[in-house]
Length: 257
Image (cartoon, rainbow, N blue to C red):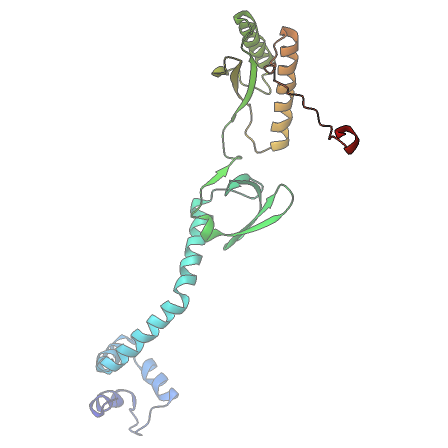
């Protein structure tokens, strides 16, 4: 402190004029004024000049150092908190798709989330990283759609295709606990004037959170389609293939004589 600053502040606290300020003297000075505000205000006003350029430079350098050391950490923690408590795209137990892989949320922490893959492999993701990725959540999805591709012979009569549509419709309507009645049988293309590529679009009465149940229901539908094909004698046969036969016998020394 400059001499002028000492002369200004010292008499305010050193009321006994000992030339020294100890802890007791400072405490007594603060408590002697019941309001306490006037003494504090005078002390602050008197010490304003202490905040010289050197002090400001020192504090600034320390602040820059703190930002350099902890800036990225604070940013990561902030992003993780926003992801967990604000975005909150899933809960423990949800089936999700992250980076194209189906996983189940096993554990959620402030900084990381633990996923479980289908083979029980655990994957740890930083929440700050997850905040930058698209995430699909089956549990929060409504009833989901599905599809089934198949081919029939180009020579299949239109009457059989009409009967195929009718039988599919009846099956979906008689099992409303598994399927919504709205569906669509689409002809995608005719290939080589030989086969007709078709797709059946249908809707489950569930989302795919319970994936084993979803697979079981689709298996039942595929087997029903097989049954319908057999009943209507709808099939697809490959075109005749050319086969070239060649003599693979290697001439021996005796046969060459």
